[in-house]
Length: 167
Image 1 (tube, rainbow, N blue to C red):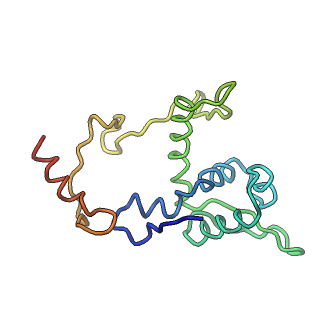
Image 2: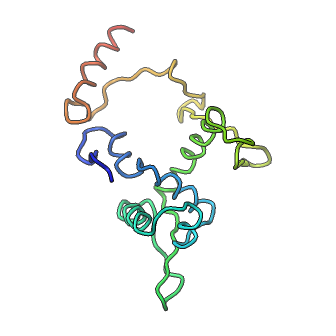
């Protein structure tokens, strides 16, 4: 059970984690992406309780990450399908998987490989403006238009000013 809600924090990362930051959520999203999109199959693949899966799926549907599609009326059965917001999460999940393949590799090697066109995908985070890879060494944080002191960003505005002065 989650102890703290990030929903009211004045931070895009915190608010994102409120929606997709639960331990099970990235695994549920991975499975749905891979075509494991029915409730019973998700329970079997992930080994989590039906109540917990119901709670996580309801949250993902409520937040527009997944949508339900009825595939059987009697008894009612739904599968879970992609939304535009969820499709944008897939590359992020693949990048996290690549990080895990490098730093937390399971015994025997990576369990999943991703293809991009005709070659193995080597995910990286790239700048949408120039296409170059982004690393922590070449980023400079600066205040955004919504930047202010608020829960979740109480110290950040002052740190961003200091960061800019130190550059």
